[in-house]
Image (cartoon, rainbow over all chains, first blue to last red; front, side, top):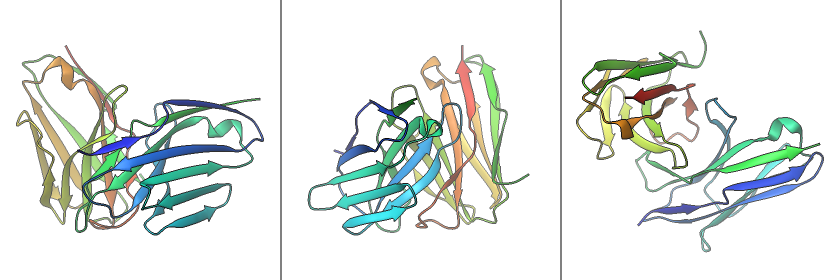
Length: 111
Length: 113
């Protein structure tokens, strides 16, 4: 079956670093996505990984290991506005836009 | 208007009602999507349209009927829904199917009584 696992909730302190993990088991793989969703708002795209390794974009980085079915999103220099849900999603094949989402990790940043 | 807009933002309907959700994208994209987001469940793809043609139907019950008259507009027609259909319905668009980034609208919060 198709399965995306990520922690339900995490907390961290302003200015700190937090790592949100995602493991996946899907029938196919053609890329892993991270989205940010503030409460009551639309998800917004953060990152895309299709090859193994680390992709850095400002304070956010995303890592992928295809052999381990594993990704993480790293948030540095946390700010209060980073409090949101972080959704991990896998595109499970070629010539498809079917994204399989995890339930999301709700991150709370405290002062 | 910019980005992806959805109307209405909130909808309450009875099980015998017929209603429609509307999505419009102002990004010049060619692919549009309907997703369902229920509490404590993963975001779930419902339908995909690419250049107005439906390319994915993720085993969605027939009480949900999508319509894509052109690349900028997407509708979801609802009839004889069940209370378990209450959820946030999100529309998204991307340049084409297979492009990496999907842009989401703010969603319609649907409650079925």
